[in-house]
Amino acid sequence: MQLKLAVGPFTIGASGNPALKPSIVTNFELGYDRALPALNAKIGASVFVQKTEDVKGQLSSTQLDIAPTATTLPIISYRNIGESEMTGVELAASGTIEGGYHWSADYTWTDVEDQTLAGYSAVGRGTAFAETTPAYRGNVALGWENDAWSADGYVRFVGGFAGYSTTSTLVPIDGYASLGGRVARQFEQGFTVAVSGQNLIEEAQRQTAGLEAERRVHLTVSKSW
Image (cartoon, rainbow, N blue to C red; front, side):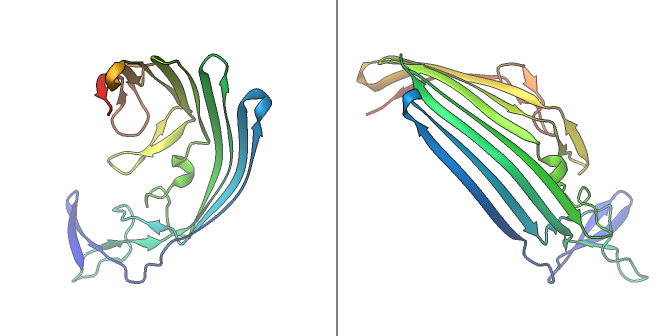
């Protein structure tokens, strides 16, 4: 089956590829967790490797897969364009503190390498995993609660990376931190009133290549039975 597409003043054909191979993903992970009763806490660490073979490259109007002839259109199609490998380390910890406090934190570091076959572009084919994966990201959370009240706050931070625009080009995205939180009051008969918010640091924050993430604040009333 072939689909005709208009690319500027030109017409090209988009075709399936019956010879396309499935991508094979292999994962290895080694982890260690330890409880720390004296601190009312637990910690964990893991290292991981993920390898993807026969990465499926997407349709790309910037690279023809079959040249045109006097009677046929130029053709673009899906192709296996190479392989990608990701290695990383993940650290995590959580615990409680006397007085109703609880906390948690995690950090992930990753390194991605894309190896494309000659003649193919990972960026043009929508598989630039090395550029679109942040080198590090993490979360820190702190909360408190008693019989009636609860309060939680968290910060998520992400290192710089790149995202695909609507024209399938890469757009750089600076590293950012996002703050969120929730304060709730529980009443008798199972009623809870809460105020929560996300992306509280800025009115609008660039987190992807698309629309900016807006600051959001919600007031909720819920009832449990």
